Length: 505
Ligand code: 4AD
Ligand code: MG
Picture 1: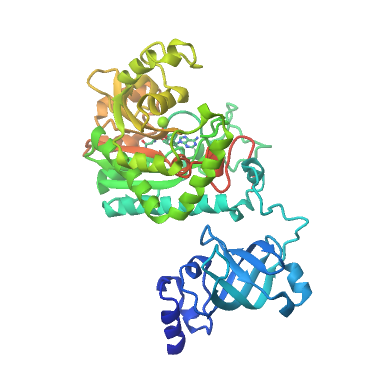
Picture 2: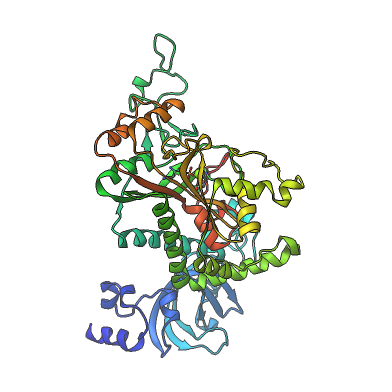
């Protein structure tokens, strides 16, 4: 064992010891992933490698990928040493295990390559049937084979970045003393009150039980009451924040809105921090800090994947007419976001800008902006961010009529302490507010908005016992991934998208 350990230390100077399990140290030959191997100095050391064949050319060079890196690793085989039947089974998509020696590569592209001694085909892949070939496939085509698209460069990069962003978010909150709260997925409340919930039931839809009055008898349903998938964990997060002070949720949320757009999913992940004693300004600071932290984290930790997506995006831009091309490359956009303060303006100021804007005057908006109080459409949000300010914008103090019941009413009696963060190319990425902590004000707003006061006694109890100012927001995880990967359709940044008419895989 000492010998093996020494060999690892001597020959693999750069590999991270955390990548090697104890069993591998005891094994005579270490099994390493592509990422680790690519960082090693090649001095003829023996290795085991597993992965999927991306390309096989001249019956000699295998480009192998195991998902640990955007880069493939080259294996070289002397085809005269292997039976023809084995050589034939090395095809794009097949899975192999190889042992061999890591030598400096003679090719210009790579530093090292594995000269193969033994080769096992773990899984064949019939080239006549395998849908992925070493060429560019359209995103639409890949969406139809989402079960296989992980095996492409683009999607492996996206999902590695998705992981890194999730990790960075947990790290950000953990470092600041927040507690990760698991809010329920099945609930009886519609937090946003928008009525866009997916019902959860075990009732037999062919034989729905009825009461004597002919109503559906929910007493016979699983929870003895109507229930649904959560649209937001906010209300539960508020309950916890009024004891733990700083909490956040990070989980799936569900909306049965019939929105067939590149920004909406029926199942998406949301991060919802909730902080006791924070006001609207603290809330904006927290959101801006978090977004910048995440962007900095992936710039530092995902540089190869980002570079790949950046180049991919540049290629895409070239196909577009000049006026539709992005002003910034993906990397420039991320850097810009990091270095500049987000513009903070009130809803009222935004309406003035929009009213006087060229597209509004020339009738170019689908929804003209005429009066204070109208809800902003994504065309308006994108005008503010992409044309007017050319940077992320935080809009605050919205009319109470267009916002949820729980937002804190401002002294003017017409606006609430809400804030939305708008990002270039995305529109709304964050929605949040200071919460109404005053019992009477909250109750009267709930009455006005026909919210069930009796049923929501648990929410109101926090205002009855030891209420305090508090604030929070919701960040749409996939919208953030869209932004940092430069992709344009939200269906391409979640493994298996759910949207109207689709729940495949
Ligand atoms: O603005 P929303 O609806 O706010 C809430 O749910 C609050 N309870 C949040 C809070 O204050 N704790 O949603 C928050 C964010 C949006 O800004 C958007 O990024 C994302 O969630 N989002 C969606 N993402 C993908 N598909 C959808 N259908 C989305 N709906 C909202
Ligand atoms: Mg919103």
